[in-house]
Length: 255
Image 1 (cartoon, rainbow, N blue to C red):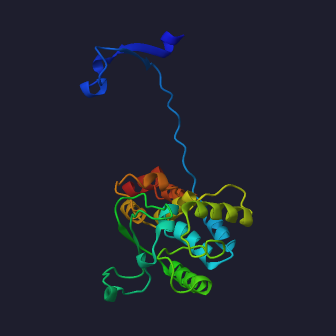
Image 2 (image 1 turned 135 degrees about the horizontal axis):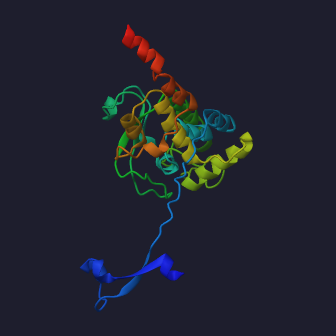
Image 3 (image 1 turned 180 degrees about the vertical axis):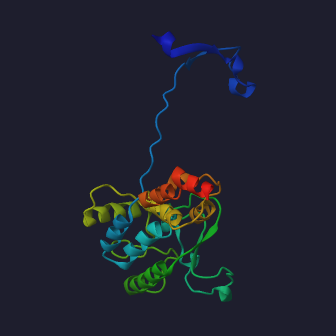
């Protein structure tokens, strides 16, 4: 049976660097067959699920977290790693040395004390819409009421449990989404990355091209956004209906 599963091969096909200090050639087993497992897609959260999570929030901070995941497409580590100085939510920030027009976030990879970090090595700018700007304003008022004007430079901090004012962790964001799923009574498990997938898919469904999705997700390779795209059924139906039927093609040719 083993001879059907493996073949005995020598080390002569390996480069010198891989041989190490082994004296002479050695034999090893090489599998004859490899199981090709089908790829499994990570599902996206639906718009209805994202709205349900938003409505299940009890405070402005949690609503902002949901929007940063579902409306901006950030990873949990990027959300927890945001600093207040990264958030330029005015229309014009040139007086403070930033030439980027409109409200936006600066995503920067740092070594943070709360263990949060951006997976992407590059730094980039993400535009945000009026919903995120409004949510940030509401959260700023809530934070000032709970912990005052000073404190940590981290954007998101503990407001309702000790230690107050300490930066929110990536694990805490995952726990929040799980709690919101239960509170909203969703019929399935929704996690933070599914909200990021929803953002990418919504950009594509709204007419965004692949390089726009790539830039918004902060990805360097053109093919990286593809696993994040889950076209809406309606968009697939419209794509099919745009293909002319043979009868229409024949009618055009005869005319």
